[in-house]
Length: 345
Ligand code: ADP
Ligand code: MG
Image 1 (cartoon, rainbow, N blue to C red):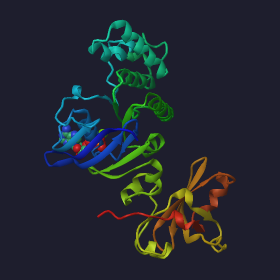
Image 2: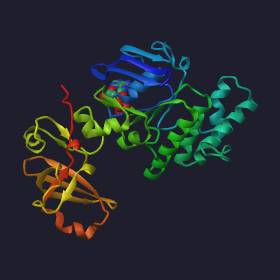
Image 3: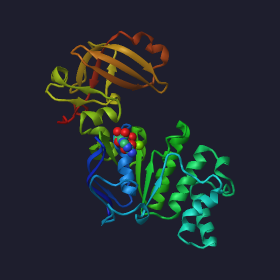
Image 4: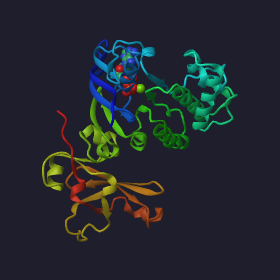
C-alpha cells in the first residue's frame, strides 16, 4: 500500500432523528478496489455522497490524498461518481457523452475526441461512438458511463450499485471486466453493493455495513472465513451459526460458531464411524434443494439448531436425492472449520 486515497474519521450523518451514518472510521489506500457491502438502508450511499461532497457530514471529517475536504464542494474534489441510472445525456452521442467532462475543463476538441475514443476502446465499445444512448443496451450504457468517468483520470472513482440494473449474466461479465479495467488504470475504486457475491468477486477489501456502522473490514477471504460478528456471518454467505446449548454440545465449548455449508460432509449412515479427528453431529434432513451443480441439505440437529450443508453433485443425480428428506444422517467437519464468531455487544 502506497499513499492514502481516502480517510474517514468519526463520520456521521443524521436526517432528523434518523442516524443514517453513525460514526465511520475508514482508510482506503491508493489503487485499491474497495467495496462497501451491506443491506438496503445501512448507510452506504450516504457515506459515498459525503466522500463526493453531495452531502455535508453532521460530524467527522473526509480526507482525500491527505487533504481535509470536508467543507469543499464536489467540483473541488478529485473524485467522480458513477450512479446506477448512468445519468447519460440522451441528446448527445456516445462520444460526446464521454468527452463532455473534458470539454468543461477546456481540453481542445481534437484531443477530447482522441481521449474519448481511447476510453471507448478500453471499455469494449469500439465503433459505437456515433450512437445515442437510446440505441445501446443496458450493458453498453453502463460502459459509456464508465468511460466518461475514467476519461478525466480522477484519483478516486465512486460507484453506487452500478451493475444493479443489469441481468445476471451481463452483471457477472461486467464484474470481471470492471475489475480488469480498474487494475489497468490503477485508479482507486469505491464500490457500493448489497450483493455479497459481487463484493467477494471484485474487491481487494470489503467494509460490511450494518445500521450506519462498519461491522468489519477485511479481504474477501477474511470476511468469509473469519466473520467478525454474527451479522457478518449471516450476511456474507449462508448463515450457519451454532450457539448456546447446541454449541456446547456439538462444538464442546460455549460461544457462537460459524461453519460454512461447503465444509460439512453429509453421511447417509449416521452410525458409520467417523475418521479420527472429525467433529460429528446427528440429525434429520428437513429439506433437500437440488441446484443443478450442487445440492443443499437443511438438517435439524438432535441437539437443537439447524445446519445447512452443500455438496457438489459429483456422483449424485436428482434421482438419488429423492429418499433424503426425513432421513437420519450424520454431519461431519474438521474442527478447524467451526470458526468462533465474536459476539457484538
Ligand atoms: P444504503 O445506501 O445502504 O441503502 P442510505 O445511505 O441510502 O443506505 O440510507 C441510510 C438511511 O438514511 C436510511 O434509513 C435512509 O432512509 C436514510 N436517508 C438517506 N437519505 C436520506 C434523506 N435525504 N433524507 C432522510 N433520510 C435519508
Ligand atoms: Mg444505496
